[in-house]
Image (cartoon, rainbow, N blue to C red):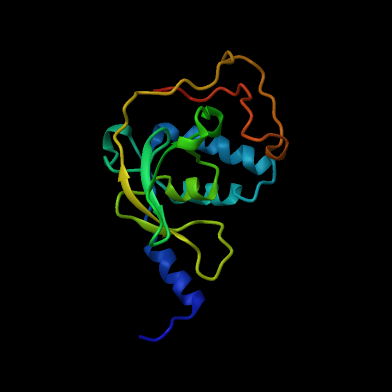
Length: 181
């Protein structure tokens, strides 16, 4: 088999890339995260917007069971021989136990969002000729109906700071949409 031109290979991959399937209830929350990144001129803002633009949005009842979603656990492997890792995909404002979580605003988090078991895709943002791939091995069913998001009252004024100023995403009191909003 002959080696394929990298540009042609990238075009073929783009056509075969799995479409993210996401719950319609997370739309506003994810768009707000992308807007906050864009305001801070963060390089991952455009990647998150692209992911959300390409996504297939469904009602919660119509979601495939083995889909990587916010607040859910995913088992994945980076690279063909790497050890599997199991982490919870989170909104960065929900950070509670960093060793067991991965933020949705990281290259790996954006890549995993909306994928299904068996999907294999290169990690976004890798500026390498052969970027590392991630394989989705398992998705745990949601064990809770929701996560407590922030302790500030819903009418508290939102404050903003740069990601560079904080070791993690600020708990800025912004009101996130609740179930049914």
